[in-house]
Each structure stands twice: as C-alpha cells, then as structure tokens.
Amino acid sequence: MQYRRMGSLDWQVSALGFGCMRLPARRRMLVKSVDPRESIAAIRLGIDRGINYLDTAYLYHLGRSEEIVGDALRGGYRERVKLVTKFPLILARKTEDFETYLHRQLRRLKTDHLDAYLLHGLNRGLYEKARRLGYVEKLERAREAGTIRHVGFSFHDTFPVLREIIDSHPWDIVMVQYNYMDTGIQATTEGLAYAHGKGMAVVVMEPLKGGMLANPPRRALAIMEEASVKRTPVDWALQFLWNGPEVSVVLSGMSTRDQVSQNCDSAERSGVGSLCPEDLEIIEKLAATFRERIIVGCTGCGYCLPCPEGVDIPDCFAILNNAALAAQGNFGQRFYTHFMRRRYKKKARCHRELAGRPDGGSAELCVACGACLPKCPQGINIPEELKKVHAVLAKGERVDKYMERAPR
Ligand code: SF4
Ligand code: SF4
Image (cartoon, rainbow, N blue to C red; front, side, top):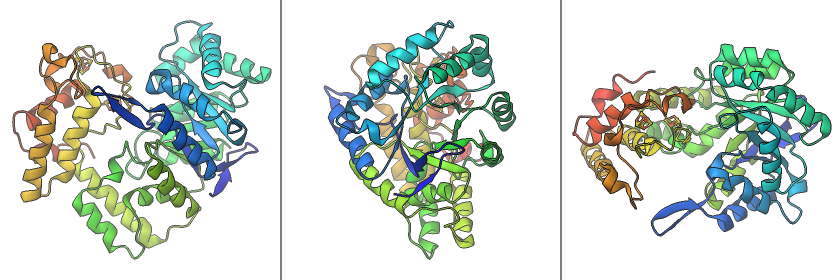
C-alpha cells in the first residue's frame, strides 16, 4: 500500500480508503440487502492489505453501514484505522440533535471516539442550516472533549460555495466528488487546489462516477487498448486521481472482496506524477467519449429515495445510461437497447404492482411532486429526466436523440 500526507494532519493515510456506502449485498426472498458477514470480510481484507481510512455515514445502508463497520472493527481492527463518519444534517431539526446523533453513531460503531466527524453533504442551504442551528460550534466542543479528533465536511455544490465554506472555519478535511469526468463540475479541479493550498486533506468520493467509469462503451475500450501501458478501466480512473498531489485519499465503495484486492493492487502502483503525458492524453480522450454518451449525470447515491410514488430513480437512470453507453449504431446497439428495455419492463407501472417487486417502480409512476429535487446533490431535474427514461425505454424512442442534448 502507498501512504500519503493527510493535509496538515500528522497522519499517513493509505492512498485507498474504504467507502462503506456500497457494502456487499445478498438477495433473500427477492429482497436485496447488505450482507453483514461478507461486508465484514471485505472490510477486514482491506485493512489487512493496508487500508487505514474507513468512511461511513449515519445514512448509509439505512444505518446498517455504521453497525457493520463497528462489528468489523472488533478484535483489534479499530486501532489500525482512522474511523470517519458523518452527521446527518438533512435529518437534524434542532441544536440538541447533534449530541443525540453523535452518541448513537458512537454506539453503532462501538467506539469512544471518531478520528474525524464530517457534516454530511454540505451545499449552500445545508451550511446555512448548520450555522443557524449551531452545529459548527458543536463540532468544536466535541473536538475539545476528545470525542472527535478532527472536523470536516462532505460537499456537493459549486466551487464558489466551497471557497466560502473553507474560508469560514478552520476545517481539517473536505470530501469532494471528483473523477476524470467531473473535473469541471461540483468542487472542480480548482476547488481541490484551493483546499489543498489551505492545508486541508482532500478526500475523493465517487472516483468511478457511481461505477460508470468501470463499464466503458466500446469506443472507450478501444482508446485504452491503444495505450502503451495496459490498465483496466478502473485502474485508469484511480491512477488519474492519485497522480495529483492535492488528493490525500481516494474512497472506493467496494462491494466484493475481488474489488478490494484489485483496488489495493492499483493503490500499490500509485504515486504523485506517475502518469506520463501520453497517459493524460488517453484520459482526456476517455472523458470526451463518456461525455458524448451519458444522458443523466446520476451517480446512484440514492439520496433522492424513497420516492413517495415508488419510482426507483437511480436504477431508472442507470438503465438509460447503460443503453446510451452501449449504443454503437450497429447490431450490438439494437440488442443491448432491447435488453435494457426488457429490464425496464420488469419495473412496476402502477402502485398495485409495486408490492413484492424487487425491480422497483418505473418512471411512469412519477407525478412530478418535486419531493426528490432538493435531495439530489447533482442538481438533476429528476422528473424531467424521468420523461426521457420513459420515452426511450417504454415508448421506443431512439436513445441517440437524447445524447445530442445531454449537457457537456
Ligand atoms: S418528482 Fe417524481 S420521482 Fe421525484 S419524488 Fe416526486 S414522484 Fe418521485
Ligand atoms: S438522482 Fe441524484 S440523488 Fe438520486 S441517485 Fe441520482 S445522483 Fe443520487
């Protein structure tokens, strides 16, 4: 494992961190849920391979993530890692909620302190709420008491907002969405440099853009094959992040032990400045190819759920993007789009069909109530984009029509 500086903190952090929002899952009676035994095995494998940074949150896996992480860290594993979780700002209503959530999280995690506690998912509105309800002062008091050792925030907004938040408080850590497709949105490359320049540790989330960069279209695969150094799609995406000095740790939400092993192998090959100009050119081409093909910039985080009407929003967008990514203008396109339409047809089209359907609700169930809109960190106009899902996957419109209109 390679280790890197954690901003101004006196930690050496593993280049790869374990993100605990996509833990291994199992299916029982048609219902998919997190698999505790396999999750514990995957987390411990990561630690045995040198990972020393674990990231979870109150909201991940509806609270199960923290419980499972707590179990995984028994038997001496807790002492080997920096443990980080997040305050669920979106659920909190009053000032005293801070202690209620923090102590519940410590109990779930079976620890007496956190190495860092982050305000979860800050944007301008949520930061105003955090200040209004006194949560920033609460963080500092918990730090003085030793319950939490360092403070920070995870972030989903634009660079100007990031700069304002950074300048308003002596934070230690910022967690940002960043990957080779997102260099100009969310925190942006400029934002990473700004945080780094202020001595903050930069933690990267969504390095594969919700798994999208792990499943490239055929044109992107051809670009990778042209390169003199052979890498997997995941390795290309991860090495891009480790190449820059601004990044301290890259979080990967690993769902199998194989993924843990492969990502640890990648981290062992990583280093600042390890990519040559030819590699960087390849990555530019890959980003351009993906941007041409993606219709909805959904990362699959699931924050928009549950939809009161039962729409499985992230899966609807994943199916549409998969159809677009596979579109090659030949027999392959027709076959894959057909396959995606079949998958979509398994989703419920009315409330009566929802009960007991593992495939969730289709875009047709959306009544445009807008309840999901403020929850989406990507700012996606969900009801509008769901219309495209329905048009392509149910009405048979050509997916290319929407690719031309996709934002770049
Ligand atoms: S706008 Fe549509 S998808 Fe969003 S919460 Fe309302 S019904 Fe669900
Ligand atoms: S629509 Fe937004 S909130 Fe919902 S899964 Fe996608 S990125 Fe996350």
